[in-house]
Length: 136
Image (tube, rainbow, N blue to C red):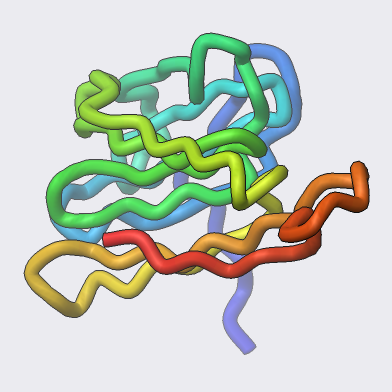
């Protein structure tokens, strides 16, 4: 087993980082904090490249998916398509998902496809249970 060699340290501004992902098209490492911030860090140094909010409400991200055109972040309420510079390109919300709890991205095609897991709502109405959706 090789020894761990620290080549750079990433320091969030406030809250702990809880998600991380490698960018497939640039030498960037993406991370998200529990305070609703998303960061891009330069590989290998860890130096900051860009930082922005996940959404207007500063919701924490439940997933970050770097891809060839930028980044997809999932918050409890929406999926956000964001450029590498931090500009939101699109936001997708749908009441049938309830509260988003997880997701996974398949980037093997021309455009990335994201599977979303919704926790549902607690009101007990029809269709308020857990859900699974595919978005491309």
